[in-house]
Image 1 (cartoon, helix red, strand yellow):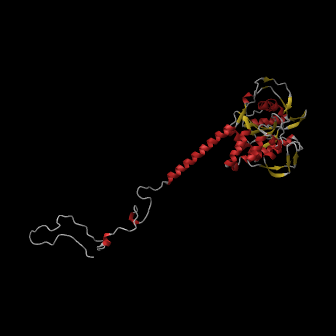
Image 2 (cartoon, rainbow, N blue to C red):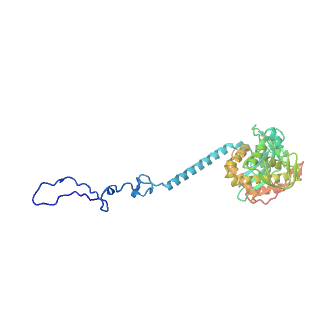
Image 3 (cartoon, rainbow, N blue to C red):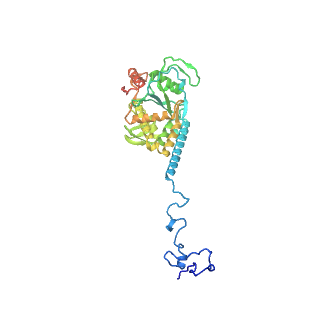
Length: 394
């Protein structure tokens, strides 16, 4: 197609009238970039597939004008802050929830004439035969009977310090002297008369405060904390952690406790565990052998609780904490960190880093087990000085 150009006419001689179109703005030339005119030139730049907002008609290439690229550093930062905040809130909430469940009922300030504190920390751990809150069916299943009140079924001193942990069982038939004491409820002072009783009689007479007072008087060792658990609470904790594996040392059959075990490794549920630690009459050594089994089981239980599979699993941790904290009775100064330290120390005993033993016994008097005074004195000195225990018990 011919090109159309509009311009000035060729010059002519002399002046003449302005040419047609003079002074009117020039119109664009309909010529394409290759010198060709026509509609092909006119439509150039259209229908080329160019997308709005993409330069050069090459399609999407980045966020485009007005839409900045994502700031991943900023996103990661706020995600981390959110996660950490959630963890802190959950941890703090769990702490206050657990702390509120502790039954701080024992007032050690009522205990008089206490020995001086030594190095390390001493816990008195008591298993009572309390049946509080148990149904008749539970009492039957657990072979607890229906006796009123509560008595101490087991007593242990756990010492923690820089030289390992030491777990010492106090046979409930131990011969002890009841000293002067202040009644936990009456506030009345009862003067000591030199009378001797079984150790568990002190608890039956005036509860935890008199038991602490009696042990401190007869040993010279100051007890820093008190922890007590009843039958039902003990069984519930074992069930909450999914049972505890034990290596039963011999065949045991005891109708009174409900124990019926064959020698060897097996996992004990709450009912079986309670029967095992209460078994007494089926063992040749009676109370002394029973205390050894109690030590083994409590160490195994602590070892099971203080594991990542329990601590890091909320579906196991919270039921375990709920079952344990609801059933524990502790002193008024006991905190969650003290309780955690106690469990870790018991775990170390089962792991071989600590020592477990019975209170040294030299014989019997009036049907009660008599402590070996010389060995007990040395043992207490080593505990007070937080030294490595070299004394052995039966």
